[in-house]
Amino acid sequence: EDRVFKYYSDGEWKKSSSRKSVSIINPTTRSVQFRVQACTQEEVNKTIEIAKVAQKSWAKTPLWKRAELLHKAAAILKEHKNPIAECLVKEIAKPAKDAVTEVVRSGDLVSYCAEEGVRILGEGKFLVSDSFPGNERTKYCLTSKIPLGVVLAIPPFNYPVNLAVSKIAPAIIAGNSLVLKPPTQGAVAALHMVHCFHLAGFPKGLISCVTGKGSEIGDFLTMHPGVNCISFTGGDTGIAISKKAGMIPLQMELGGKDACIVLEDADLDLAAANIVKGGFSYSGQRCTAVKVVLVMEFVADTLVQKVNAEVAKLTVGPPEDDCDITPVVTESSANFIEGLVMDAKQKGATFYQEYKRDGNLIWPLLLDNVRPDMRIAWEEPFGPVLPVIRISSVEEGINHCNASNFGLQGCVFTRDINKAILISDAMETGTVQINSAPARGPDHFPFQGLKDSGVGSQGITNSINMMTKVKSVVINLP
Ligand code: G3H
Image 1 (spheres, rainbow, N blue to C red):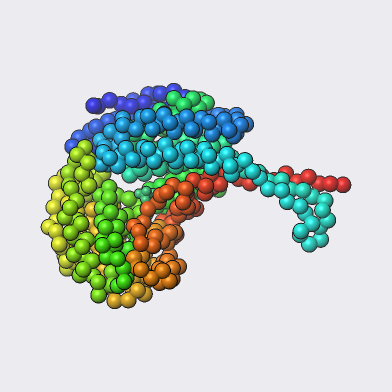
Image 2: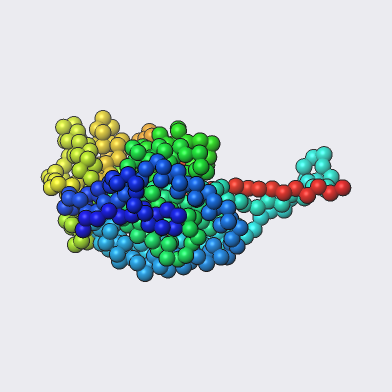
């Protein structure tokens, strides 16, 4: 299939006047799967202008009605799970079953958001003045949460649907309008998801989706004066965006180098299963993937043996066959991963599997005896390659974790809850999982990164709050 999908603006599907398109390369076949419109800056302007107008009346739409429409969109999204999942398989090589899960999870997220929204936006605060020194009870302050205006959502390729709706739903329930710029890989899945919101019957222009080259409309969107909030998930680009953006709230989730610390008293079967699931699901292309294992020397041999046994069970091949390890998203990504592997090889890491690559498909690799002078000790491969660093003390593990410029999540395996808590407190990451691999979900849990891993906090409740502003009205009594 090779056609140019239209973009969505003002409630209609449109062709760009640029007459140009952006190609989406199927990571498995490495040939063009789809094309999307290369929107112009003029078209972005128009879309944002319309979003601004649509938002004004949407903010006056009763909260329960906004929720009702979101519930409808969620149901339609779930009905369309198969065609959307098929796009994910073709565009980002997500294993078929995981692709369906992504869409279902997204429907649930939208519904939960509608429910949470009516609760938390349905109440405000009432304050009285005489609790502050020097005041009589002559002032009553009423607070409520008001929308920000136009929210710009930029999700990454690894969850083009789920990380889009995790921005769309909170923005919409809170009374904002939303402009989506999907990732190139995953753009068609995103357009199909937007179609579900279209079918649900949201007002024209409230939600729109512009596609195109980052070099053409990326900065233009993020620096646009009509944008009142940016919610971005992705890589380094986020740091550049945050430096250029105006005085608007930002929500950013960038990379991670999630460490997995394994203590001597850990349940090593449990740890091994989680390391493989955490390190290799979707071929390691998750910001929350386990990206470095820090294991106490005493149990290292046993753990590595158990992990290797699990790695050997991973199936490798096309996403259509629901293989565990599928081709990574682009050739340049595969090249980058290969660079990290070669560097580790040259510097003496232990390879338990032979390095094997066919196109974008890279066979899973566990690299042992990794040392801090190797790039893989610090950089995120975003691929099916997992480094193991042997440590002689817990402090060494914590120090390695905290020396990273990332601070998304981490995990610790031990049967000693006191140690687990102390280590969790010492790890400079947004979340620490005790006895499980890092993960964002369940989607109402707070999700945030420290340092270069992000700005603000996500999760349904936090996102709704972040996409609003507090407004006060003070009643002054005579
Ligand atoms: O890639 C970043 C995602 O936010 C990770 O989500 O933990 O559900 O895979 P996940």
